[in-house]
Image (tube, rainbow over the protein chains, first blue to last red):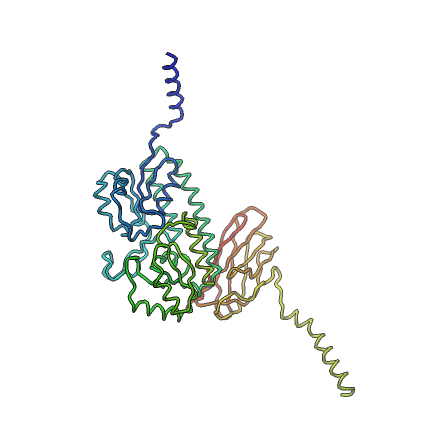
Length: 301
Length: 143
């Protein structure tokens, strides 16, 4: 009898701490973007369990989901995608998950920045332009993405709405402070020196936000090799514009960049995180932005 | 003119020394409410004479203008407007000036930075704050 009473008491006490609609289970999320993985973890906190399928430092242009990744995606209630045609393996994900999980291509809801497509790019429009998939290289876009993820979490789990709103507000405040810091740091560099030579064309959003002009060695995707003609034109441009430094990327082979520096006399300004979170400084979004902006400004001064 | 050449040379040197004080005052002009700290930022663009004017709806206010990571003008003003003249590199791509201003009274305040490059029209930006403002302002001449 004592045991039964004890159990009933324990159940009643436990029930007092559970709000209506709350279950012990967390909302399972599968994310195909390192930046979205961070956003989901920050906004969802203890109410979500996020499987980051594209890992920090992995090149999202070349990523292919493994059977284990597809299993995790099939088990999720929400699938976060970068969008803007970055996930060329989307059909595999859709086949694996069916219509079970809500699929959210966050980038598709963000402002579009058109850029020149690679010659064999299937997503190019008739004028040879394509949407820039690297939306996370704009802090303002990551702020918008945070609000989109917050709203989706609330839609799927209304019981925890207040927590999602509070967590998103705190994260958005950090992003706003980060953008302010970035603007001040970039202001140290005269506008006529804001010429950014990078391994592939991933920084158009950063260029738009902070007044840089981009000269990319490769195209939109890291899978495209630069032609000899393009490299020769770029070498002339770097010499004419007296560009002081060129930048490597954490996910790319630096061979061509190193050759260009030899031809032009420009120095290697450092390595940038172009395709999302990485290891080291860029293991958080704030760290990524601080690393990229400081590296660029300090090398071009 | 009479006298030895040595005496005449000494007189000329003394006269030049006496002129040094007034010349320094004329060429090193100080503004009423602040001190220009730097004549030019880094870079290779052509330097231009630029008139800067700062207006705050709350007084007194403290301010600092930074260009190229270096403070170029700072001070405190008891009147709503402070002004100075500087020489700055002003490339066709424009310049970024960082405005930091603060005031002791907590109230909504508009702070306006106007910039007039020699031979060009005025460009101005306004920002609002409650106790302080910190803003990067971009100025570019129309082509």
